Amino acid sequence: MPWHREGALVAWSTREIAELAGTTLRTVRHYHALGLLPEPEREANGYKAYRTEHLVRLLEIRRFTRLGFSLQSIESMESDPSNFVERLEAIDADLADSIQRLTATREEIRLLRSEPTKPDLPHGLSAAATKAHLSSTDRSLFAVLSHMTGEGADTHWQAMLEDYDPDDAAVEFDSLPEDADEATREALAQRMAPQSMALSENHPRPAALANQPRGKTQRVGETVISAMLELYNPAQLDVLARIWRIAGFVD
Amino acid sequence: MPWHREGALVAWSTREIAELAGTTLRTVRHYHALGLLPEPEREANGYKAYRTEHLVRLLEIRRFTRLGFSLQSIESMESDPSNFVERLEAIDADLADSIQRLTATREEIRLLRSEPTKPDLPHGLSAAATKAHLSSTDRSLFAVLSHMTGEGADTHWQAMLEDYDPDDAAVEFDSLPEDADEATREALAQRMAPQSMALSENHPRPAALANQPRGKTQRVGETVISAMLELYNPAQLDVLARIWRIAGFVD
DNA sequence: TTGCTCCTCACGTCACGTGAGGTGGC
DNA sequence: TTGCTCCTCACGTCACGTGAGGTGGC
Image 1 (spheres, chains in turn red, brown, purple, cyan):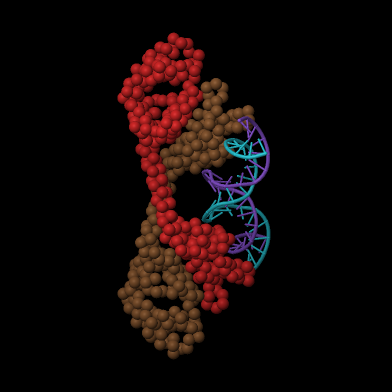
Image 2 (cartoon, rainbow over the protein chains, first blue to last red):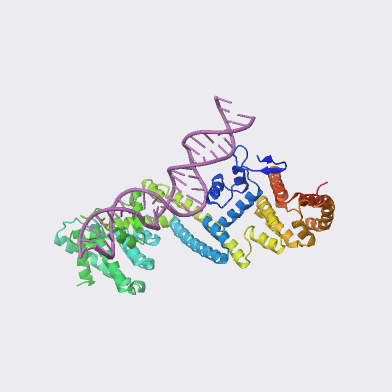
């Protein structure tokens, strides 16, 4: 409870002024430490005795922080109030950015909630990869592929995956032992090639991918190739090479 | 540039994997420190040699953080993935809150930019107070009054201020010396009373203020009264008391 | 003596940012 | 020798939160 001093005047404790202002004890003390809020006089027992001037100042500081000013910028602004509007505009631009980002995040979350799926890939890709029964190895490859080719290409990969039929050959490929003999590898490649060719024919590289600067495309290629080299075993890599030759992707 | 190792395999440095993932050196090291991202093997010179598995994991972590997960919650979620959807919903609620707050802040900033005025009071009140040529003392009183009566009452105070005419008597009141004699004080009260009465008649207390719980109203009253006791000098307080008696607010 | 409120350090939070000081190959 | 990149501490950021340890009046 506020106590009386010097006759009619009333003073508040730190906790009281904090609650009056709708904030916390620690916040008030923090403003003292920064010199933003002057310390009031003390009672005989050492307690701080806040008065209206302090409440007014505290409310003013809170108003500025709610507007998005940092405590430091409140100080600097009060020593040089010249470019107040510019500061406001800078804060406003930051706020617009933040809202933009948070809204995009909410949209991602909405998709995830509407169709829960492992969030290791962008949502559409993840759902398609799950429906296509991709192995975790293949998912890893698509994680790299999708990130490296950029968001714009995701719909392309997604459409391709949605068109993909996980047949027996694919299952065999996933569990192909690294020492599979040549006949096995060649036979598997022959079985897998047709679908690869069909997919590549039905889903040509989109313009966004084709029109990249040369260096970028090369980096993407190197990264994806090196990912494949690590993700697949020698027999699987050989099967892939054979498929590419059959399909005419390489010679 | 990536360097080669064990024949065809390629490894990246910390900086390289960070850039590949679109993040920073320090971020990668931070994830190591938290145990979120396993450390890769080292080259002979002690350099870390990252490979695809690390890139995939790094991209996954980044995806979670962009969704709003804290680093800690990524860990705990992976050890117990059961309530994934609940976590998503909690994050979504936080995001909605944040967007709500930021949007409200932007609206305040928009008002301030459209009509720049001292931001010591809520915008509408500040503009009205400035137009009414209120002294900084009076502004302080309104800062306390507005905060204590809550946002809902601001339009009431604003309407009152917009109706207020800062006449000669008000100017005299602002600079009234604390030892002004009784005749001066009484004359001033007589000149000021009519406008006070008119204002209070044209702007009755809104329901939002009248329907407060008793304790709340009392606290507001005490705080505002104590603000007045500090903001005005004895002669000014006496003039106010005389006005109130003339107007019949008190007896 | 027990409870309650006040006080002053001073370390903790969160996701990294930023030097400081040293190494290794060209 | 100079430049460049890597490495490991370790303190800094921002606006406070959270004890720890002690005091003073009922």
